[in-house]
Length: 124
Image (cartoon, rainbow, N blue to C red):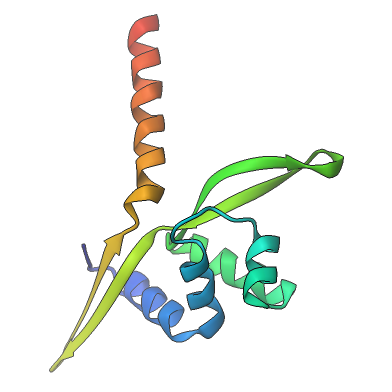
């Protein structure tokens, strides 16, 4: 999928160039993880992990795959990379950024959409 929006292009490029953002995306490609699990696994300072996750979510590169309740009743988000791969090509004055969606991350959202749609149709 080609990205046309200039801000999103820049976000993808920044994420790929930033070591910690790239580690977060790699860590969450196959399985959903909490920020705490990501930071432990990748040895990223907690404050940096929260900042990077916030930025990655803002540009749609990281998605909330679910939530779990932990000790004390606190909700924790499980995060998953929205992209599987990305490529950047610079040719003359044109910058092309292509990404391959992380299908596993999107499948869950598609299933939820159709489940809600089916429920509404049954009620209606």
